[in-house]
Image 1 (cartoon, rainbow, N blue to C red):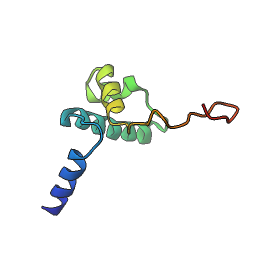
Image 2: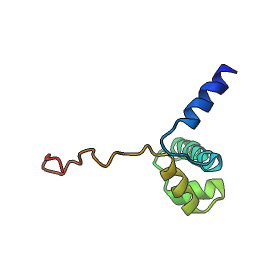
Image 3: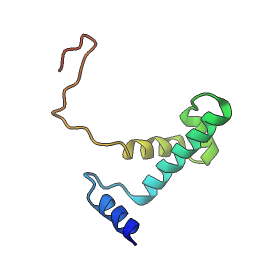
Image 4: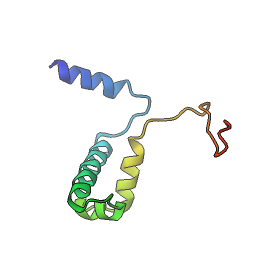
Length: 85
């Protein structure tokens, strides 16, 4: 019960709301990527992950992008020279 409450708190107090189905798809894609990496000894492409899950590539990319942590617009971006933009 306590673990459920902690999960609910983390889910409800996230800065951006992502649907549960989209998060589930992303976590399946991450698991498939790990399994394919172990099996083939190389990083799989999005197409390979999509084929293993029998899903369109676009859905995989959308789901993986949706679970990324947001970045502040005020956070500095560094160029090749090392100067902040």
